[in-house]
Image (cartoon, rainbow, N blue to C red; front, side):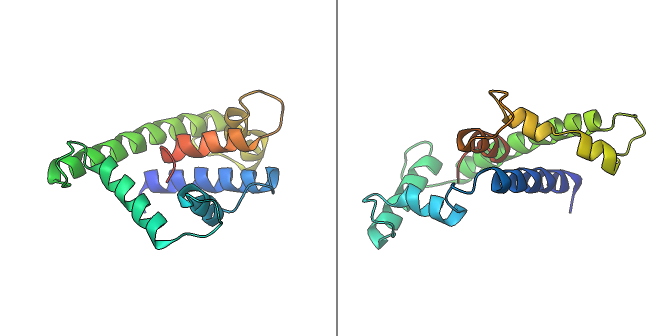
Length: 147
């Protein structure tokens, strides 16, 4: 597993643990998935709702609207994913260096516990608590959008 993947997984795990501790009222990920696709709001997904969601996804991927997804469109998607990954890697690297308060190139358990970088960034209104909106913002920032 490469360094970028390890850093991203660590950030996601930290944010995930924080979101679990902060908000027990937020629906589970599988429920949020159902809620996003459940057009009639009945709490279940019909075959038609899944087909409609697939059609919306296809339309997003078919950037030139020619009713086909070609290599150019897939390459553009790959580039967008890589751009987001590079940006995330840079943000995580800066955050990690800030945690290394004594500059020895390692983050001790004490340094790690003393800093709450992701929490501090996520707490956009500075009230010392993470709302579901703040957690969703961070998840979207890290993951590059819903999905």
